[in-house]
Length: 542
Image 1 (cartoon, helix red, strand yellow):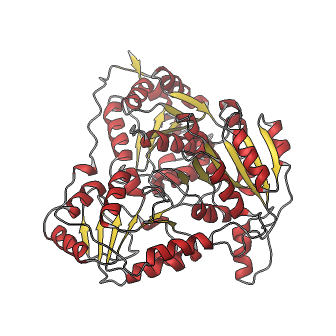
Image 2 (cartoon, helix red, strand yellow):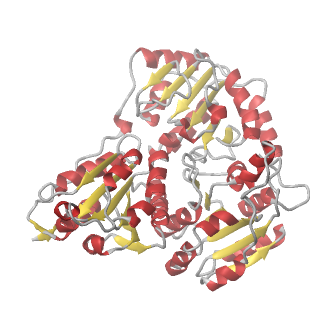
Image 3 (cartoon, helix red, strand yellow):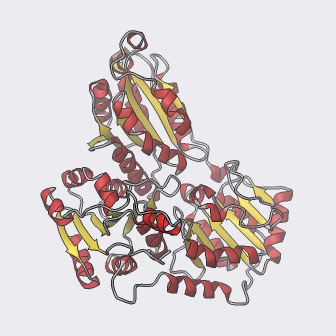
C-alpha cells in the first residue's frame, strides 16, 4: 500500500518536477517525505514567499533547457498559506506554472477544531487558475487536472489542499500516466484572417513587432528572431521577453513597459507603423502609457494561442495559434524587403543608448549596470527586484538569449530578485547569476541570504544603496507631496553578508565594482556588492 502523499508526489515526478520549496509544519510532513522519496529535492527557505520565487527561478532555467515542469511550493496550514499569497498572486499575473501544496485538517475536525484553521481555497481562488481539495480514491485524476491546468494555455498557479488524513492514509489507487499536454505549437492558422494578415505584411514598409511573455513560455525565441531578421522587422519586447532577439542585434529595440523615457522613443514608431505584429504579447506587463497605443482601426495583427480579454488595445486580425506556427504561416510565400527607409530604427537605438548611458560623473546606478554587464560573462542571467533600479536596469542590461533577465514584471512585487536568482542558480549552477536589488528590497527578504549560504551558490548580489524608496520618493516630489515614509537609515550590508556566510564589500567606483564582480564567480559562496549611489540618484534616469 502507498499513502495519498505518495500518489501526489509520484504525479509531480511524472510531470518532471525535481525541486520543491517551503517551510514545514506538522500537517505536511507526509508530503515532504513523499516528495523526497519520489526524487524531488525539498529545499528549506526562510519565508514561503521566497520559496515560490525560487521555484519560478528553477522553472526558468529548466524551461530554457527544454525541460518544462511546474514549480512546487509547499506550505503548512494557516500562516504558511497566508504567507504565500503574494508569490501565488505573482505566479497568476506573471504566467508562472506553480503547484501550491498546502496541508489542512480533515473536514470532520474542521467543524469543531479552529486553531490555525480557515478556508484556504476561499482565500486563494482569486489568484489561482484552480483550487482542489484532495480526496481518497481520486488523487491521480485530481493531480492530472492540477498539473495540466497549471501548464496549459497561459500558465499559472494551481492550489492543492491536502487533508492530513488523506496525505497519511493508505490507498490502493492505481497511478495512471500523466495525460499529454495541449501544445500551442500544434495550432496552425488558416482562413481569411491569415490571408489578410499576410497581405498586410507583404505591403508594409514600416512593420514592427512586440513580443511578450507567451512567446517566452512557448519557447518561440528562435522563431521570433529568424522572422525579424528575414523580414527586417524591428522588435520591442516586454521586460519578461528581453532576449528573444539578441539585444545587440540592429533590429532589437529592447524592453519596454515602465520607462516613460523609453516610451517617448518607441510609441511614435507604433503610430508610424503600417503593420504592427503582436507576438504572444500580454500587456499585463505594461504601464498605462501602453493602453490604446494605436487607433482602433490600426493595422495590427495578433498571434496568440490564449484568448485576450484585457481591453488594453484593439487588433484588426487575430491568428489564434502558437507564435512559432503563426510566424511560419505568415511568412509563407513572402519575400524579404527593405523596411523603415528613413533610418528610424537606427535612430531610435542610438537615442535609447544615449538616454541610458553611464553618468558623466563616472558613478551612479547606470554606471553600475553598464559595468557589471561588461564585467560578467555574456551567458550571465540577471534578476531584478521592483523599484527604481529595475526600470533603469531593464533598459541598460542587454539580454542575448531568452529568460536572460528575470523579474516580477506584471505584479511588480519586491523581494523577488534574490530568490529568483537562487532558484535559477540551483537548477543551472554552471551559469553565472547576478541579482540587482535595492537596499529596502534586500532588507524585506534578508533571511534568504542564509538560504543562499546553505546552498553554497556563488551568486553575485548587487545592492543599490540609497537609503530611500527612490521610486516612491520620486512620485512624492512629482506630486508636490511631503517626504513621508520613504527614507530610512543605512545598514552595513558587507558586515551583514560576512555574518551570514558570504563575502561583502562596499563599492564606490566602477573599477572596484568590475574587479569584485570578476573574482566573485570563483568563490564557493555568494558575494554582496553594496554600491553606494546616494539619495536621488535616479532623478532623470528613466
